[in-house]
Image 1 (cartoon, rainbow over the protein chains, first blue to last red):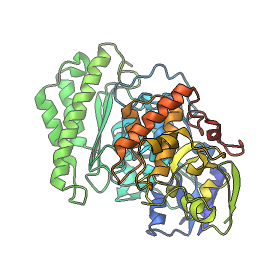
Image 2: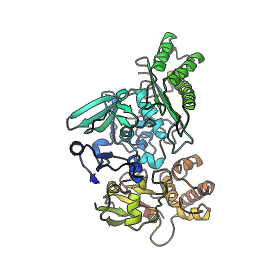
Image 3: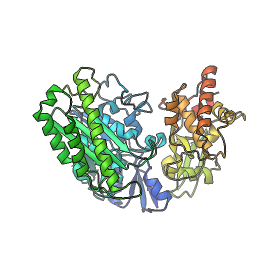
Image 4: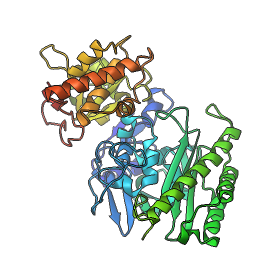
Amino acid sequence: MEFLQPDSWADALAAKAAAPDALPIAGGTDVMVELNFARRRPPALLDLSRLPEMTGWALEGGRLRLGAGVTYADLTGERHGRSTESTDSPGSTDSRDGLGRDGLGRDGLGRRLPGLAMAARTVGSPQIRNRGTIGGNLGSASPAGDCHPSLFAAGAEVEVASVRGTRLIPIDDFFTGVKRSALAPDELIAAVWIGAPSGPEQFAKIGTRNAMVIAVAAFGLALHPDRRSVGTGIGSAAPTPVRAGQAEAFLAAALEEAGLWESRAALPESVVTEFGARVNAAAQPIDDVRGTAAYRRHALAVLARRTLTWAWSDYQRAGAGDGLTGADGGKR
Amino acid sequence: MRVTATVNGTQHQADDVWPGESLLFVLRERMGLPGSKNACEQGECGSCTVYLDGVPVCSCLVAAGQADGCDIVTVEGLADGDGSLHPVQQAFIEAGAVQCGFCTPGLLVAAHDLLARDPDPADADVREALAGNLCRCTGYEKILEAVRLAAARLTASGAGVAGAGAGAPGAGAPGSGAPGVREGL
């Protein structure tokens, strides 16, 4: 087995073009498990952990570009923020969502992307979050990947590159099957693009304990008051992460019809219940060692109701002016 | 391939390394440092936790080549060279936090890192920081006691834990010389 260790992004793309079978490795938290257990013997490893182009994040044209090498710990801020490219002042942080004493990331990344930060916070353990990357999560393309529901909810795009050029893949088109993605053999994941949230985001995950657990079911939710829409993402309940499109359309219409985006009045219980039912209906779960299909459907309806209740309460609070939610509390 | 790294302040070199093997294997089998333990090989148990350029990681999940040129601190590097234990280690012994001892090296590194970042952690913070380290002798209560004891002593002595990099970017970077942990008491 060869070990390819490019020291620039251009060299990495050239290496991948020359050796499309080379297995990219960044944090190693998925790849090394496969190697340790001899489940995989790629002809070469392509180490991406030393490429400065992959780390850090930036605000570009109102959207956040997260290098594929951004770690879960970068998102949670638990190591006081190791990313370096903040382009404007992150302002004050808060920690009301229980992401630890440091809140949502001292450098502001997690505060800007609260849903993704919450998801990152549920990954593995501190040791895993220190190494595992958002690009690796996408590259592994597990239906249980913890970042995916929040990326669906936010409407993210994946920037992939090869010597042939760069393209943006909408997150809805990125996953093509269990552990399969739209990535061409010569392509590498360069970054993830996410619009700055205009409203609250939430994430919830069911597992057997709070640490070191693969999701039995997961759900991400984003309210987009700027465009009067709702984003969702379901994890671990279909061959790929999926969007609950009908639940999104139902909730957006319900909010619109009752003037709730403006009034921020209490959500009718019937709306919350129907939203949960439609999320339940969007899942295509299977029975497996972690849980039954029936349990996953039930859990998703609960997670959907729960996250909607939290998000709506965040939205109401933001309207009351304490600015606790989203990147700008939905006030933009 | 050849892997060269600074481990516990000393330059180590290993030859004929298979690129797919883990840093843990290199440390234990090629560099003669068996302190880091090999249990799950999938990042679940934390027994192999080491500092890699100042950041605690599961060494079983670092490919050997990824560690080339890096600064590594293992459990063997926590204590001073004079034979005295680091206060975190001493506290583990006194609190009875060591039973079979297999999880201990990883717990020591994780606890050491926690106290470097937060000298007075709340119990919830301790549990969170140690969530990636499994003890199958069910000794968690004693382990919590040990961390509280170490925190109290380090705070009382005013020494703190000189981080191997936690919250101090650059410390423990390749070529920075002796790891910062050696300065901690």
